Length: 285
Image (cartoon, rainbow, N blue to C red):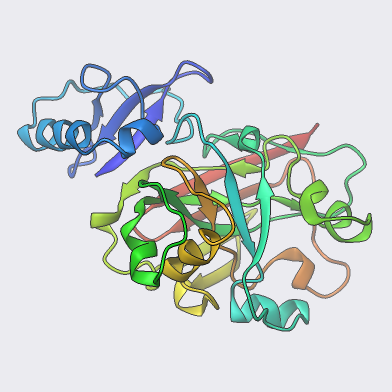
C-alpha cells in the first residue's frame, strides 16, 4: 500500500493512493498514519481490506498539499557514510561500523514544502536517502533478517545538510543536520510488502534540472536489515521511528571547487524507484 497524509500543515488527514493512482480518503477507517497504526495488525488489515474493496471515498487532489506520510515520529536515526561511492567521493575510509547520528523529528516537512537555507549558511547540501519506517518494537535483534522483519515500510527522505555547521564548527554532526525543514519526507509510506528488495532501488536527485545523484541501494556498505539490527543493539526502536540509511555519491561536498552548494531560488527534485518523487524550492530562513 501507498499511504500518505494530505492537507494543511498540522491538520493532515490519512489517505491512500490506489493502484490506479486515485487518491482515497482513509479518515473514516483510521485516525492517522503513525506508529500506533503500523503496530496494529488489525487496523492495517482494515485499511488493506477497504483498499481492495474499492469503496474508499475519492479525494480531489487538485491543490491539495501532501504532508509527511507519517505523524508523531518518535526519532530519526541517521546512518552516515553508508555508500561505497559516497565514501570514495569524500575521501573517507568506509566505516567498520555504521556511523550513527540523529535528526530531530521537527525537521520533517512534506515532500513539496519549502526548504529554508539557514542564516549565515555557505554550504547547504543535498542528500537523497532511503528512509526505513519501523513497525515493531526492536531491541537487541539477532540478525539482519530480524531487522527486515521489523520494517513497516519505506519512504523517500531528503537529508539536507549544512556542511560548515556539520564538519567545521566542532562537536558532533548534529548542528549541520537539524536546521528547520532539513528532512522532507514522502510523498508516500510504501508498505514493505511492495518493496521486494530494499537493496535493489535506484535513487536520483536533480538540482535545477541537472542530475547530480544517480545511485543504487546495492552500493550500501551496511544493508537495511543489518542497519536495523545494529541500531537495535544501542537503543530501542519503536513503531513510527525512522532510519535514514545514507546517501550515494553526487553531493555538492564531493564536487570540485567551487562547490555548488544550495542557495535561495534553487529547486531540488529527488526520487527513489517505486517510492515516489519530491520537489523543493529553497528560500532564505
